[in-house]
Image (cartoon, rainbow, N blue to C red):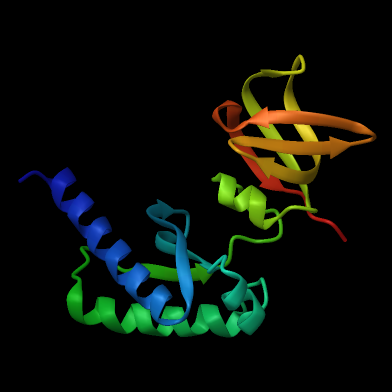
Length: 167
């Protein structure tokens, strides 16, 4: 087994721990990165609220600072026991943010009514960039409305998408 396999195993182990801890707090693991940065090695865990109506009714739509603190404490305690690292690292736990990436149709459906920016892999109505309010998700198509224009963006054409910050 080479070093790259052992690194992949370690990331898998960390991901498993982070997923277990997030679920125990009614959250989901949105993203996980372990990489060297200017401050040294950083283990970055991004958590999100479960998109279910029950979870939103109980906790609201957003991840709180106390959610991040609780996940950080629990992940740190478990990793201290279950994982060995070759070097020191900084653990950061956060939420996806106000301009969060939209990765799946469920994300678009969850944020109907919010503004989004979509970069497409192929032109939609002659453009590779679509911005506007998410009006609906119909089948595998995202309906975006902007300035009286409706654009239908097929899921397969979405290269990148994120919410726009609305103040």
